Image (tube, rainbow, N blue to C red):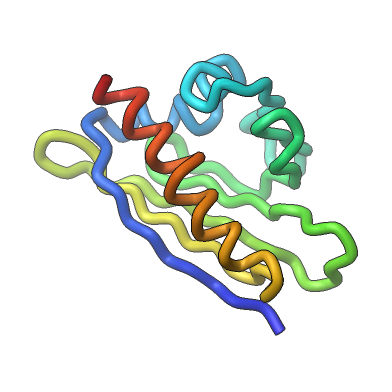
Length: 127
């Protein structure tokens, strides 16, 4: 059985800036501190955090949304991440929805989203 999560974070940057930070491999490396492979081409493979996160890009809507399938070894059910960006006074409201997280990976995934992904992205724009 799988689990899901939904997280929100306000980022002090425009939706366009946040979108670029999520889709440009050079910018991903700047905020994550690790090499990344990323393309805005649907059905392309991606890799982040030096291969810790791998998957397939599903869809993009510039400055609004990106959707990806994240790979978990040995899992048959797809794990789908949707990130939506909403303009808000003083920045961007970012909503992350992650469906199909394997139960045994859930706690690590929650910690990873909050600490290694959202905190790092927020620090990148607010430092």
